[in-house]
Image (cartoon, rainbow, N blue to C red; front, side, top):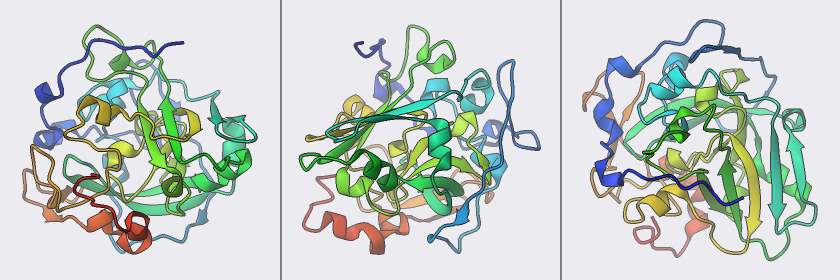
Length: 313
């Protein structure tokens, strides 16, 4: 089936969300892990996970902020839209198709994915809009899933695709929309297989809320947050770089690699500093220096040896 291509709002007309850092967008979630929105509410399920090898000294962002301050345009462009409008989304049953240049293509059910050994990974998350969080994700290394399908030697990239359900995702419905659906992302195969890269199925000890990408999303902590595609339904191994949604929408602003780089500004704002959500202060009152590769340079800088990261942004 051809991809749905609704009329788009020009990227230049979308107000940078960093200007919306105000308390009105922080919608508190109910105690006990309720996911609020629409006419229904889905209760999160506790997950068992081993402590992962990656931890931080940074304080974790409060759960209420992580689950109420989100970018998820399938539910709307406002920070509060995903938590307010995702209650009707059904994350179960679910399957993820893994295909392309592999020996053993397979569809994985959600139960199979949850049966993988799960780890808690406390990672920094840096948004290209110059705000950040520290999140205790629960997930599985993407490399472990790729091993199950046995990539061919010709596979060089990994493409990801999110679900299209305009009847459940109001941001995909209607005439004027900011992006083309489905949302697409991609990594080089060595990036996808890096030990830091995970498929997350939960946070704060529970299954993912709808607004955070239920039931499964990508987490690549040294890259800007828009690389973290949510509600994944397909993963394909390819020989050439796959199309990526924001790179297609505004190639002068969003590159394929999207590595956190404080030395390369977005054309409309600086990337040198960031605002840590949940620590108080708005409109520049709580800024800190942005770290190259979001602080994971010791682990990942070798992936880009010899590359010009100002050209390959």
